[in-house]
Amino acid sequence: MEPEVLLGWFAEQGRDLPWRHSRDPWAILVSELMLQQTQVARVIDRWPRFLARFPSPSACADRPVGDVIDEWAGLGYNRRAVNLHRTAVAVRDDHDGVVPTALADLLALPGIGPYTARAVRAFAYELDNGVVDTNIGRVLARLVGHQLKPAAAQQMADDLVPVDHGWEWNQAIMELGALVCRKAPMCDVCPIFEGCAWQSNGPDPATGSAAVSKAQSSFEGSDRQGRGRLVDALRVGPVTTDQLPPVMGWPTDSERADRVAATLIADGLAQRVGDRWELP
Picture 1 (spheres, one colour):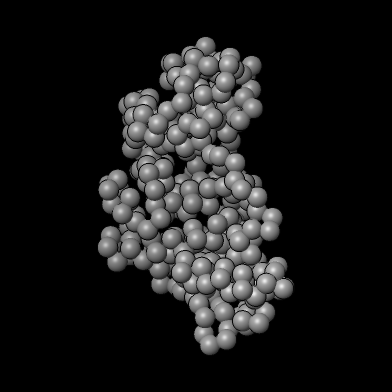
Picture 2 (cartoon, one colour):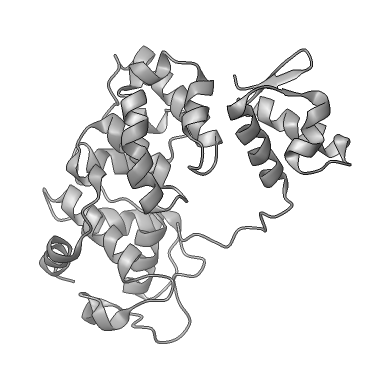
């Protein structure tokens, strides 16, 4: 595959997303955590609002975690808000308020995994490491025509990055996976179709390959739904223990409500003060 082909396609077809105009490591970190399982359109609206409220790691760390949870409403898993606040505290206390560059330092931050760490390096610091999210993982598996284990996918992603083009390349291959090489691929408009080993012939090698997302269990009626309902209620104000079952959607199952509510305390999403539950 000729890198120039994909880079040229991205230059013409890439979306004008606001975080692509930033190289601020904190802003990039926030965008990456927001974009995990949250629609791009929603993040476009919420990303600048979040940064206006928490413009730096220190500004975030200096506020209660409950403020970050409050601002995270509608942005997916609330635990990411807790981890973002913990990361902000670590950056303030251990890195003089500057998001680190070194991969090991990034991976040591709370809740920061291999993808997010490498995304910060590529998109904020413009370093030549590959990143592997679900979109890129799908592209890589189809390019080679077989499933990839995590280490192999990461090595392939690193090897494909053209020297001194880490930002552009990772944006380009990610955009290809988001717009063209989707779950239902649009091979007829793929700029690198000739270099694809799969070409929609036979079973999809992306299924079960490294980083490619799998179908989640049903949300309706789940503990996750109850947790989300309670956190949403706590954003409005405290909830008393006797209010937990109806607030969480299980008006006749106080045992389940108490059990699931307790997991919010363990995850740093809530605290109990006497008979009242509230954001931490």
